[in-house]
Amino acid sequence: MLWCFFASDGYETADNFSKWSGLLGKFFPDNLRIEHNVATVQEFKNQVLEADLIYMHGGYTQKFLDRVKGLDLGELFKNKVVCTNSATTIALSTAAWDSEERKVVEGLGILPFKFLVHFLLWDMVLMIYMVQSIGLKQKQK
Image (cartoon, rainbow, N blue to C red):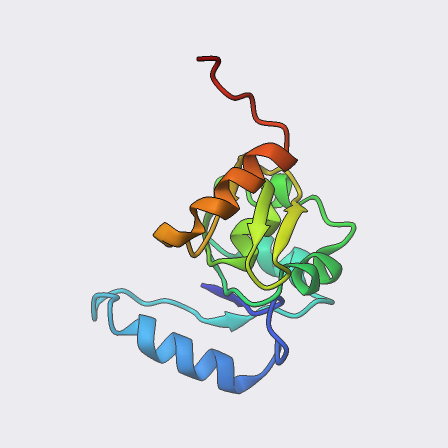
């Protein structure tokens, strides 16, 4: 399992890895042996090729995009189980509302749809804004 914290400030720290692998590791069966690795920017492509399961933690969309710039993630992630979280979901989508940036941002388009993460009922205004700003067709009355 490859743990990717590229969207976080401390993206290669043992603290992130220890915290999340300990928490999520509790859900794996005892007889399942999983090798855990922390992703590094320099080795990410090779690490993804070796991994079957990739967990990409949230944080800041632009930080993640900057750190994977130039990689064909769509190709790298073929036949992989990829778990995303907030900012990394946004990064893989076509476009999304970035709750940190408070604006609609373009993603890599690997996931062919638009996203609204951290949705709450009062975010309906944001959804309307997103629909208008990314050009979704509205039904005619």
